[in-house]
Image (cartoon, rainbow over all chains, first blue to last red; front, side):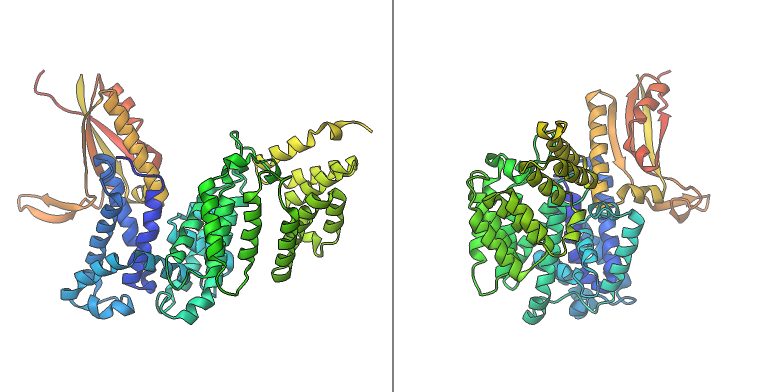
Amino acid sequence: MEAEEHLFRREAGRLVALLTRVFGIHNLALAEDVVQDAFCRALETWKFHGVPENPQAWLMKTAKNRALDVLRREGTARRFAPELERELDSEWTLAPALEEAFAAGLNDAQLRMMFSCIHPRLPEETQVALVLHLLCGFGIDETAAAFLKGRAAMEKRLARAKRTLAASKRLFDLAGPAEVAARLPAVLRALYLLFNEGYHGASPHAAVRAELCEEALRLLYLLLEHRVTATPAAHALAALMNLHAARLPGRQDAEGNLVLLADQDRSRWDAACIVEGRRQLELSAAGTELTPYHVESAIAAVHARSSSAEQTDWDEIVSLYDVLMRIQPSPVVAFNRAVALAQRFGSARGLEEIARIEDRKRLKRYPFYHAAVAEFELQLGRLAEARDSFAAALKLARNPAERRLLQEKMSNPALLERH
Amino acid sequence: MSEFALLYRSTQEAHREAMGSPEKAQQSMTKWRAWFKEMTEKGQLKSIGQPLERVGSVVTGKKKTVTDGPYAETKDVIGGFSIIEARDLEQAARIASGCPILEFGGCVEVRPVMQLNV
């Protein structure tokens, strides 16, 4: 049989988490070595003998055997996970303890690693990079590419971050509800950033990188499966990701061109994702806390139930953006609100609202800001301004798909006429 | 038709480089599988052969001294072998040039298998 896509990467993330729980977070590098070794063995033997029936089990068993060697060989020289110290100390209990650690809690191990990566002393982007590297098995090159950074810079940053992690006394413990509650918002935030990087990241090659979205969703579902971390906010984020992921098939056409929300063929939206998004939205309604994820997923749900841009309840969307402006004001939210108002009351209103955004400067780095302004100007017949705005947008376009979309908009006959 | 042994050689660093990251390892494996499949379909692969552990023992001399190997002085180590069939050495080398190990800094040694029939 052939290995399913990204099998190695996903299993690497799982095995590093499992082994770190046995070895202790201070031995993170050792855990990574053992996993690397297991993958070398897989590569060598599978290329000759083919992929075994159950590749996951094969990899896990190989890593476990290597771990057992390491524990026996270095048992006296090294200290391992403090919570398993006693069991790992004796040859009688060593193998069963390892067996149990591997069998008991794959999800638990991954969650503890995830919370550990969201280390308060690390900058947000580094936390996300670390999650991608350690939990999703992305190599240094792939992590660097995900964040559009150079390899050397990413290597240095990950090495420093891993030293910070390894200096912690132990893996983050999910048993303390207060500690979990304190760190969970940052964990959700990291997954939100990871998803967004895939959904509308600034990659020069691809406008949509679905694999980053998939990884964010996969990790989020680990949180949803755990009693302590399945909070209303986590469900709201799951609703948001599902409802946005539903639109991924419509965001690009067969040639890889970007399609704006208003022009998307909504029959291509993923119905199963929409159903799941709605289910998560319902689950998020428990409790009293209203997070930005709740509001953003409510907005996405309005789009998901509308058959076209014209059929959309823009009043509802505007009022949701009003709420979002209250709980998490930002120029981007204000801009999206202005676009919704333009849908409801026309382009003049859109431009008025945009002019009123405080801190508008920050939006000017964003190609779709200029593109939206251009669109409004075009509709109001201000052709010279529209041309300038489209040109500004084109200059900021980050990948071929964005450039093609803008060039197509600029080829509008109205804009080409001479005055 | 003659038989040729392909010996897959690489240094420890090249071997690690091929691994690089889990994703790269998987891509590398996929390429090897595809290459073996291609040779099989063309009837060129006599025996896929075996992968070899990179370390073992070396027995030397009349005293039959056993030391850990492979030899420290040889930089590249045989990581596996296959047997192929080809018209001549030239064609065998051409077949070997499709080996994915070449993308990762390794090399393939092509050696005619000596036959009893002259």
